[in-house]
Image (cartoon, helix red, strand yellow):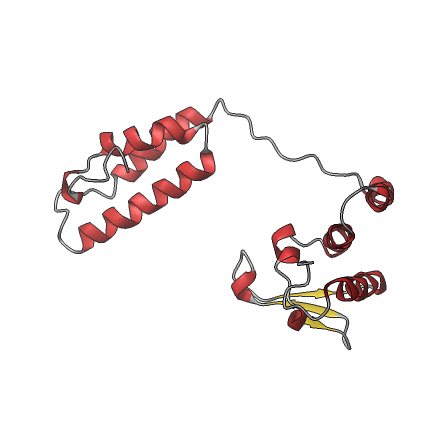
Length: 176
């Protein structure tokens, strides 16, 4: 915003876009990617609306090439995964931790269902089908925007039962 926020859209050039993206491209790659997507959306709309007559779609390929050069040296890092053989030790340590009971239950539930932590934290009691032992996460809460059906083991049902005793009939499972 500070760089081009007050400019008329038809005056924005490739150099301006690079001036916005370059400072954050390596430091905040997720933010930079989202900013690039939003800039492209706005400028594409402006071109389609005949507001930005000098706009070239090819400039995004050129911008990508410049930014790609900066990412070649960047090494991707991922969070370390827990080896399968050690999962029971992690859960045992979790149970002995000073964390709140509801956090312990949610963490174990996340491990057993292979869910994203946000899916677990946002889970609703209405998503649980107790009879069929199934957790149906609606597409509106899924990253892929597709309904996700998670079979629940007996231990998952136990965890949910304990969580329900802690939280009562509140709408969100995790809130305690």
